[in-house]
Image (tube, rainbow, N blue to C red; front, side, top):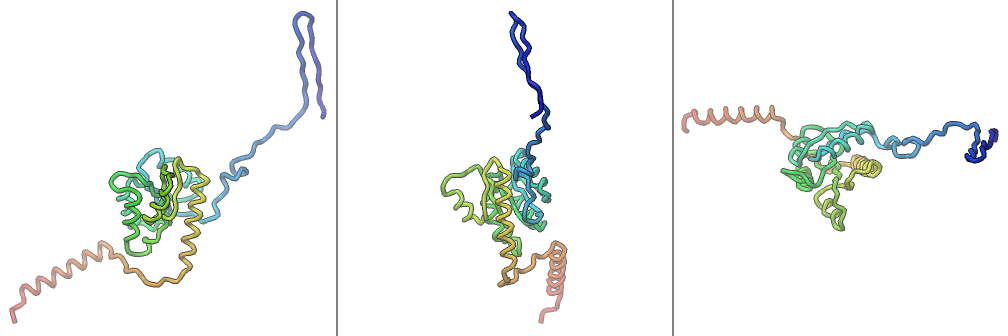
Length: 207
């Protein structure tokens, strides 16, 4: 190793020992190299986040958007049920404790909806990690859960499991075809037809 070493000493004052040698500036591993920011193996997803806490909303959204997902946020279970009827989400991250309607209740409501939305993967977000909690979430219709505070790696793992299960389910043949949900326009048109029919019956001469 090239370099110099020496000592400067002055009687009655003390000594200074020194050394010099050339070296390169070290570069620590980035998050990508450390394995915590690797790109997800599953495809990008449109994800609904149902969470009433503003800080948690921001944290989860930042994690998901950094991975390239499209994220929508609602603040309670009722809004979550309405949202999955409006848009074709690939996944729902559902807080367990929310006002108006909690996560398990919202999940049970979603599982009763008509059409393919009934099979949407739902992952619970909860600080509750007591024995039996996981079973109660699964019984409500949730597919998985992650603890709070949210860990990025564990969240990714849960999403990957849900994405894999959804892909496997999509490969299975459908046994039945769910009835289509009528749009607001078609429902209004049907109402006008019924009104016209009843009016005709009222004015028709008796037989």
